[in-house]
Length: 302
Ligand SMILES: C[S@@+](CC[C@H](N)C(=O)[O-])C[C@H]1O[C@@H](n2cnc3c(N)ncnc32)[C@H](O)[C@@H]1O
Image 1 (cartoon, rainbow, N blue to C red):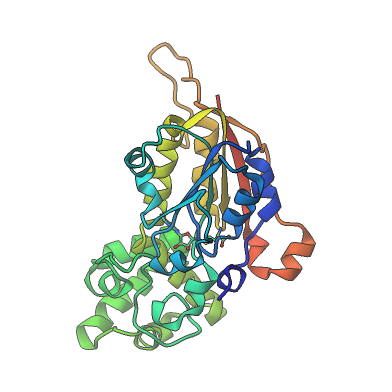
Image 2 (cartoon, rainbow, N blue to C red):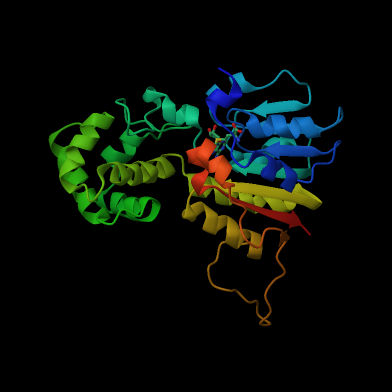
């Protein structure tokens, strides 16, 4: 399988342009996937440039090009600084993250990400991890489930959904996607595909602690980037986009403006480059409908 069959890169040139690549610089691709963005970065690097590529999914490794400028690390990007240090890298010139799951992960029935297939309730990007969607559905309390579906899926009847799951799992095992869909069929509201998509999005975010990993990675970027170094993040839903937008503006995750003891606002470590997010052109959305919700935000280390 070639990288593009694995995953078609979104906002490819926009993201690579945003990094202002220096041919001899060191760059990080936090989300290697099919390697589309990574190959574009490599094209713009000279023989002394370097690219560290993270992906927590073992499957991504097969897409790594035979190129001695790239170092693939099968780790969660929440360990960004630690893994760079391990490889004797203290600062980098640019960081890219293209968040979420790859088309490959969606299209493999046995990974359990897609409502289109039958399979186990899994949804782990990193199959070495213990927590699966099965564990979440079968062991989290009704209240935890309620909060998760409300916050991560914006499911309108999250409370009813959580109660239905808590009751169903006492009677029958919710092991597979089909078992689960059947157990919650009576509370589906509106368009079933849209409803299940929201429920699955919430589960996926919870299983992979996607927002926690994003926040941890962002917090390390001011220390990891060289002055003038760029960070470019592509998000696919408003929960992620809000986190990135606030962090780029303020250097923290607080919705409210925070002042110190003297009533002044601490200077943020990054400068926002994209006042408004970059979104795909109509032509890209036509070619790759999955790109329609993408937003690219860019900031620069001061
Ligand atoms: C949208 S795809 C990236 C596609 C890639 N830019 C390309 O051009 O093919 C996201 C990838 O990031 C990985 N990923 C998501 N969150 C991660 C995390 N916290 N740590 C490491 N890898 C992660 C997923 O396993 C997936 O392969």
